[in-house]
Length: 443
Image (cartoon, rainbow, N blue to C red; front, side, top):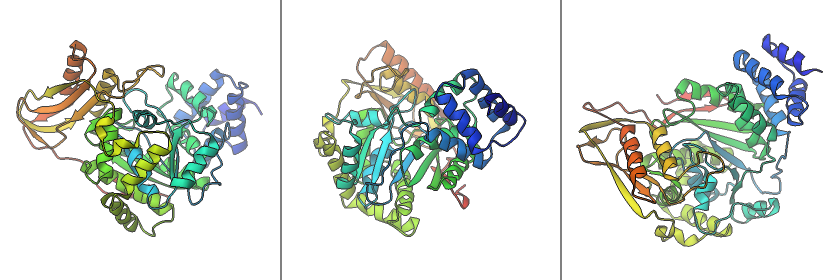
């Protein structure tokens, strides 16, 4: 078998077998297939696409290129959740304890933030003492004991994907749905979950800018999961504006606490209940989606979800006192108001610009090596559809230094708000659900 023959086969629209894909991926992982040949393969896939069975085989080849976590020592059906990334997306902080509180074990490996999107691990590490480095045995014991653990993703998880992604990033082949889908799902499958719920974002703050592209990606990932024996569902959700009101690590933890008390923003609460209900249904703790959602809503109301969050934080060395005293979280010394310069309605918010603003303040990383400031970020005061007068506060920046750099970020935030004289039509948060049975659309 030769790499060049497989590249030509895909270039000419042929379908590669699982054995051929394994030869390419494992050979690339071991350094036997060079970058220039894998670049040619990625470009052939970019133009010719892949069948569902090819994409599933590619995914499994990448999942098998490194560690595969065996979660069988954990009791029950293990359901993982993945978000394609967004601004203000702190859903894991809420869904983890919420779902665990009704008996579905959550054994999650999460990543750090890069660029305009935040990372779950960074948010958790803003809690004093919290640590995300656990041994595999300690990780599984904690899930069996309290139903929940979140740790950093191992570098040995799907290493072929990490290598291929870096190559795609510099060869113009990132925007290929089979390659994106296999990248996401290879890590989820290697992480050992029995079932997977995907939150696929679409809009100005997401990688997939249109609903059509988001649905195509969701269908590809659900198909992969189904093909390799994992029950999989995907929710398409709007990211034309940030989720909730807080952007920044400690600020998002505080908003997650409000949500677990049943006092969180409506959009964030609804998305968490929806994603969580799909997890509970796949986990076998409810017969229907509506039953699962009702159970979860009760857990917010009766305090069980919040209690589970505290137990989780303390189990991983964190200060559980933040549950009752959120001001124990890191606090920025200065607050800078961003005010409107016109009156009317907020017709749009460029979510990606707000994510970049938080990064510039120090809440995110421009490079993997950058050190983040857990305290800084921004809190929105106005969202799409709200009315404003000139001088009204649009957002508050939480900054380390009230200097020219902070004021430049304030100008960026102001520019991300589009104000018009007519009331805008707002898009719903939840757009569609994709399962093995097809697509259910809400718009």
